[in-house]
Length: 114
Image 1: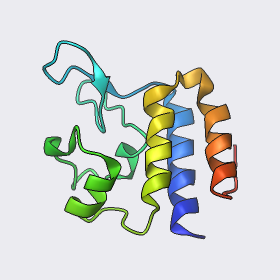
Image 2 (image 1 turned 120 degrees about the vertical axis):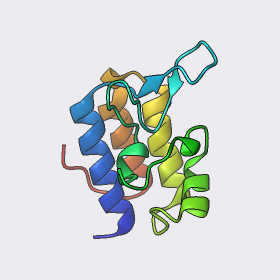
Image 3 (image 1 turned 135 degrees about the vertical axis):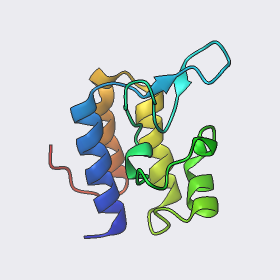
Image 4 (image 1 turned 45 degrees about the vertical axis):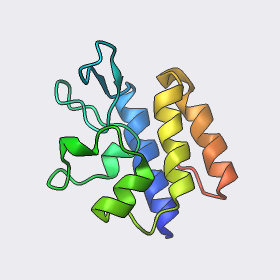
Protein backbone atom coordinates (compact mmCIF):
# COMPACT_ATOMS: atom_id res chain seq x y z
CA UNK A 1 0.00 0.00 0.00
CA UNK A 2 1.32 3.43 -0.89
CA UNK A 3 1.89 6.13 1.71
CA UNK A 4 -0.80 8.25 0.06
CA UNK A 5 -3.34 5.41 0.26
CA UNK A 6 -2.48 4.71 3.88
CA UNK A 7 -2.76 8.38 4.86
CA UNK A 8 -6.07 8.69 3.00
CA UNK A 9 -7.48 5.61 4.75
CA UNK A 10 -6.50 6.92 8.19
CA UNK A 11 -7.89 10.40 7.55
CA UNK A 12 -11.14 9.25 5.93
CA UNK A 13 -11.87 6.72 8.68
CA UNK A 14 -11.10 9.31 11.35
CA UNK A 15 -13.13 12.17 9.88
CA UNK A 16 -16.19 10.04 9.18
CA UNK A 17 -16.10 8.59 12.72
CA UNK A 18 -15.43 11.91 14.48
CA UNK A 19 -18.08 13.73 12.40
CA UNK A 20 -17.05 17.11 13.81
CA UNK A 21 -14.47 19.75 13.00
CA UNK A 22 -11.53 20.33 15.31
CA UNK A 23 -12.02 24.00 16.17
CA UNK A 24 -10.96 26.21 19.01
CA UNK A 25 -10.29 29.88 19.74
CA UNK A 26 -6.58 30.55 19.38
CA UNK A 27 -6.89 34.03 20.85
CA UNK A 28 -8.53 35.82 17.95
CA UNK A 29 -12.00 35.60 19.48
CA UNK A 30 -13.17 33.50 16.53
CA UNK A 31 -12.90 29.71 16.53
CA UNK A 32 -10.66 28.33 13.83
CA UNK A 33 -9.69 24.87 12.69
CA UNK A 34 -6.77 23.32 14.53
CA UNK A 35 -4.72 20.14 14.34
CA UNK A 36 -5.82 19.27 17.88
CA UNK A 37 -8.61 20.82 19.91
CA UNK A 38 -7.39 20.53 23.51
CA UNK A 39 -10.93 20.96 24.85
CA UNK A 40 -12.59 18.12 22.94
CA UNK A 41 -9.66 16.01 21.76
CA UNK A 42 -10.92 16.37 18.19
CA UNK A 43 -8.26 16.23 15.49
CA UNK A 44 -8.42 17.57 11.97
CA UNK A 45 -7.53 15.66 8.80
CA UNK A 46 -3.78 16.20 9.11
CA UNK A 47 -3.90 16.29 12.91
CA UNK A 48 -4.83 12.61 13.08
CA UNK A 49 -1.55 11.83 11.28
CA UNK A 50 0.52 13.62 13.93
CA UNK A 51 1.56 11.19 16.68
CA UNK A 52 0.51 12.39 20.13
CA UNK A 53 4.10 12.43 21.35
CA UNK A 54 5.16 14.62 18.39
CA UNK A 55 2.34 17.17 18.62
CA UNK A 56 3.15 20.63 19.92
CA UNK A 57 0.96 23.73 19.90
CA UNK A 58 3.55 25.58 17.76
CA UNK A 59 2.26 23.46 14.85
CA UNK A 60 -1.05 25.32 14.93
CA UNK A 61 -1.38 27.80 12.10
CA UNK A 62 1.24 25.99 10.03
CA UNK A 63 0.44 24.35 6.71
CA UNK A 64 0.65 20.58 6.24
CA UNK A 65 3.76 21.20 4.14
CA UNK A 66 5.36 23.11 7.02
CA UNK A 67 4.64 20.18 9.32
CA UNK A 68 6.32 17.87 6.81
CA UNK A 69 9.38 20.06 6.32
CA UNK A 70 10.03 21.38 9.82
CA UNK A 71 8.87 18.44 11.91
CA UNK A 72 9.80 15.58 9.57
CA UNK A 73 6.35 13.97 9.73
CA UNK A 74 4.59 11.99 6.96
CA UNK A 75 7.28 13.07 4.50
CA UNK A 76 6.42 10.30 2.04
CA UNK A 77 2.82 11.56 1.62
CA UNK A 78 2.00 14.01 -1.16
CA UNK A 79 1.80 17.56 0.19
CA UNK A 80 -1.00 18.29 -2.29
CA UNK A 81 -3.00 15.33 -0.95
CA UNK A 82 -2.54 16.58 2.61
CA UNK A 83 -3.70 20.04 1.56
CA UNK A 84 -6.79 18.57 -0.12
CA UNK A 85 -7.65 16.41 2.89
CA UNK A 86 -7.20 19.41 5.16
CA UNK A 87 -9.54 21.39 2.92
CA UNK A 88 -12.23 18.73 3.32
CA UNK A 89 -12.05 19.21 7.09
CA UNK A 90 -11.72 22.99 7.12
CA UNK A 91 -13.98 24.05 4.27
CA UNK A 92 -16.93 21.65 4.38
CA UNK A 93 -19.59 20.66 6.87
CA UNK A 94 -19.20 17.11 8.21
CA UNK A 95 -22.35 16.11 6.30
CA UNK A 96 -20.40 16.81 3.08
CA UNK A 97 -17.19 15.02 4.02
CA UNK A 98 -18.01 11.63 2.51
CA UNK A 99 -18.76 13.13 -0.90
CA UNK A 100 -15.66 15.34 -0.73
CA UNK A 101 -13.47 12.40 0.28
CA UNK A 102 -14.73 10.44 -2.73
CA UNK A 103 -13.64 13.37 -4.90
CA UNK A 104 -10.18 13.48 -3.32
CA UNK A 105 -9.78 9.72 -3.75
CA UNK A 106 -10.74 9.93 -7.40
CA UNK A 107 -8.31 12.80 -8.02
CA UNK A 108 -5.39 10.83 -6.57
CA UNK A 109 -6.44 7.41 -7.89
CA UNK A 110 -6.99 6.08 -4.37
CA UNK A 111 -9.37 3.37 -3.25
CA UNK A 112 -12.20 4.08 -0.83
CA UNK A 113 -13.35 1.67 1.87
CA UNK A 114 -16.41 3.52 3.17
